Each structure stands twice: as C-alpha cells, then as structure tokens.
Length: 215
Length: 331
Image 1 (spheres, each protein chain N blue to C red):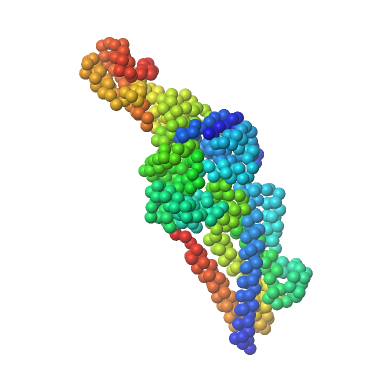
Image 2 (spheres, each protein chain N blue to C red):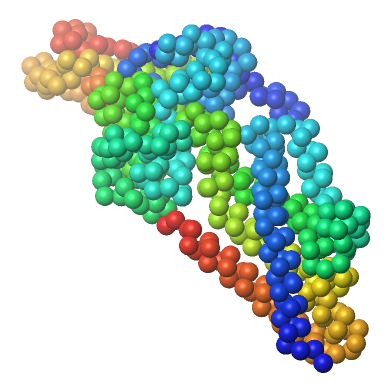
C-alpha cells in the first residue's frame, strides 16, 4: 500500500527538481539568450561567427531527446553531484536540457522591441551593456516571465522522465509503483498531482505578469 | 552647425550593396527647421541617423556642433555629443514599464540618480508640452499624440542644441499632427534649437520648415528655402511633392490651355494684404477670372488668372506697377 507520506514525498521531490532547475535555467537561459540577441543580425553587436556557434549549440541542445540527454550526462552528473540517483542527480540534465529552450524564448522576447529601443537608447548615449541591463531586459520582463513559466512547465514534465530512471518524484511513483506493479490508481494519483503542480506554476506565472503589467 | 562633406553610406545586404547615401555635401543652418523629404528608401532616414551616428558613414567628414569630424570621436566625446542632440521617433519608442515622468528623466537616470532639480525640470517640460496631470501614468494609457509629446519632453531633458525628428507625425492623425508641429515650432523658437525634420509629407514640410532638402535614391536632388521649393521646383520628384499640396502651378495651368491671356502672378509678402486686384478691376475696366491661388506660411502668394482686357499690355504694366510679378504669360 502506498501511504499518503509516499505521495507527499514524491510531490516534494518533483517540486524540488522543478524549482531548482527552473532557477538555474532562468539564469543561464537569460545569459545565453542575451548573447544570442546581442550577436544576432540587428542585435547590439552583430557577429556572425559567434551567433552561428551559439545558435548551433542551442539547437543541438534542444533537439536531443531528454531521456538520451540524461544517459549522455551520467559521467558529468557523477562528477558534479556525486551520485546518479535521487532528485539532485536529475538537476544537471534538467538544466542542460532546459537552458537552450529558455534561451530561444529570451532571444525572441528581446527581439520584440529590440530594434526601436536599441536605437532610442543609443541616441541618449547608452552603451550596449546599459542598453541590455537598463532597457531591454526591464522592457521585456513580461515576455521573459511568460517564457520562464512555459519553461518551468516543460521542466516539470522532464522531471517525470528523469523520475522513471531513478531520480525519484512523481514520475518514479507512477512508473515504478503504478505501472510496473500494475496499480493504475497510483499512476492516476501521481498524474493528478503533477497536473496540479503544472496548474500551480501557470497560476504563479500569470499572477506575476498581472502584477508587473504597467497599464 | 551641421555640415556634410562628401559623406556616403552603403549597406551590405546579402547579395548586393545598397547605396543609402551617395557622396553628399550639404549643411544645416543654426536656428532653422530643416526639412528632409523624399519617398521611402530615398536615404533621408540614413542621413538623419548619421547626425548622431546611429549609423556610421563610410566616407567623408561630418561636422556637428563643435566636433569637426564626428566619426573620429571616442566613446566619451560621442556621449557628450549625443547629449546635445535630442531625437524623436515615428513610433515614439517610450519605455512601457516607466511612468511619463520616469520616461522624461530616462536620459539622465540611465547614468545618474536624478536630483531634485532634474525632477523639477522634467515636471516643467511635461507641463510645457501640455501633459500636466499624467506625470505618473504609464505610456499604455496615453494616445499617440500624448506619447509623442512625452517623446518631445524626453528629447529636451538634456537641453540639446539640435533636435532630430524622424517622421514624428507619420503615425498620427491630421489634427494631432498639427498639434505636434505647433509644439515643435514653439520649442524651436523659445530654445533657439536647430531642428532636422525627416518626413514624406509635403504638408508637414510646408507647415514647419524654413529650408527643404529633397532626396531621391540616396542623392539630394534639390534644396532651398521653403518658398523657393514651393514656387521654383525643378526636379520631377520635387514637382510631384509640391503638386501633392497644390503648389505645382504648371500642372494646374495645363488644365486651362484654352483660356486666353493666362497669367501666373506672384505676390511678394509685403503686397499680399493689399486689395490690388479689385483696384485694377475697378479703375481699368477689365475682368479677371481667378483659376487658382495659394499662399505659403510666409505669405508669399501665387495666382493663376485669365484676363479679359482690351489692352493686355497695359494691364500687365499696371500689375507690375502694383508690385505684382508676372512669372509666366504663356503656357
């Protein structure tokens, strides 16, 4: 019998993996996305070579199926985390899988108003770094948060895949205790819990956007 | 003030070069409103962007204010130069996450924390463009005309000597356009500004500009004072532009080929307020049919008339005595 505590623990593990990886992906994705925008044609400092390199790396990172990425990253995970089991072991793969995804959304968000704001800020004498920090990122904050919400939801989904091969959490519960032992109810409860988590993420994202919207 | 000497700019597109500005020499007088007009792709946007180096020219020297060759400026001097040049844009380009007051203060706050004096100055500017009461409103709540007024206040916060206007009324309706043009005219007078004004609308040029430069295909095809351009357009592009606001007299005259004694009269500004025609009609027993007339903002008038008279030579002599210039008497 699966006790309430087991569900709670699994939920907490999934929550932990999602929150921690979202934080890292938020930071790394913002940096990578800003670099993509900066070096892109029409960006602050267009540079074909750097842009193409970053762009290819980003595209490759996004196109590797997550399950394969985890396996590929086992040696790295062992060095960084010290173990390949448990929620923490899933973090490197989640961060590396999620960063290119969010970086593309950041690049798009910055492009939206990028050209006009770049020109205006330059006319006032701002340098490229100031334009990025003081103008482009603050002006794109809503799109950046919406993008991060989508990313967090994708990451919550990835945790389930990671869970199935040893990271714990709701994915682990649904697969190992529900499917493998033929107890559909466990799978259903795990599903309801993860849907609940995703709705919660969406709600937090929407409320933040609503609060920051300047009308 | 602003002097282009053989300045050129080429953009390198994927497979071909775009000569946005072919080697160009021209200058802008201090204290004037200098209109740059042309169809889209004529190079006027490139030209205005060179003045504050939003685009960097390939060749030639460009002198702005006390800087003899602005392409050679270091970063700090470029920042100083840009502080002396305000700019407003077609799409206003306000910061949506800042209030009106914060937007106006932005050219200062991007570098230093604004002090009390700066804030007072911003509030005064907001008041002077007629926006008192919306200081703490966000741009999303403002109309296009109001946004452009915020743009103007923001452009003036560093007390610039030059104001660059890049199609500032192209996204606005006719009434709002007039309103914005009046504000620009007033601030130019009260602050001794030099204004460079890019537009594709001849009505706008006629309403505010003292000097006009007409561009086509990266080349200046004609330039002169507003009156000169309105009355003596030579280049086909200029003619089509003046025709768009009813100033292409030749085109109008050609509609009246059948009329006899067709005269094109020009009234200098000191005589436009006199009752010359009625005096001539009453005292010389002639009848005049006015086919077309127009007047510039500086009160220079033109009139296309056909005259029925027993002695047309005598009539012409009388007109000349009153100071009326006969530009053409045959078409």
